[in-house]
Amino acid sequence: MTDAVDAVLFDLDDTLCEYQRTSGELLRESFAAVGVEPFFDVAEYYDAYERVVNDDDEHDGMRELRELCFADLADEYGYSRDLAYEMADHFADSRDHTNVAALPGAAAAVEALADDHALGVVTNGAPEMQRQKLSALDFDHHFETVVCAGYDAPAKPEPDPYHAALGELDVAADRAVHVGNSLKTDVPGAHNAGVRSTWLSDGSTPDPEPHYVVDRLDELATPPWRP
Image 1 (cartoon, helix red, strand yellow):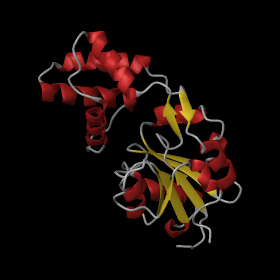
Image 2 (cartoon, helix red, strand yellow):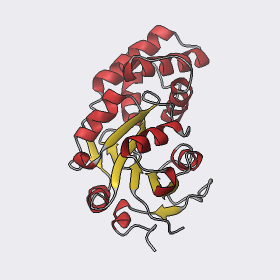
Image 3 (cartoon, one colour):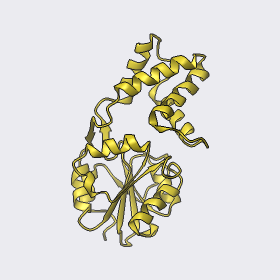
């Protein structure tokens, strides 16, 4: 596929940046703070997050959303919701959303692509949380639009957040590429929106198959969509 690309949309978490302290570390600390052995792991937390953020209710920010996730998991494993709320409070009080590091090659990719592409971010996550992460990156000024899916629009892999970002950029879907690390949200979401996908590989066999694959973001300094 060699059609011109006018816009590049990026995922944020584990694509452009990652926490310096992992969610798994904070989760273990939260269990310790309330004096119970861990009864769910970080993968179950992420699955609960996807379920909660995709339901029909509105949530008053990330703190409440995490409380709902922890409470649902506590229900599942026979623990009290009050215990879950205490854990969620500890997790939230310990999390610094500005304590993130850019992934290798992220700055180089964004700087190079900004020369002749409109750039945006399409990320699943609460606006106050995601914008703090972006503010900690030296290259955040290159992004002309930021769509926090699950809040500004339905969560990825729904097509709506991609269309919202491209509407802001005034770029058609068939002239855009989305870059992300997730085979559950980024790649299928881009395809649902009629946008070409670039997958930041983790070494596995991708399913669904993206249009392009990179091992590091700085490979995008010479974009694979150019003939």
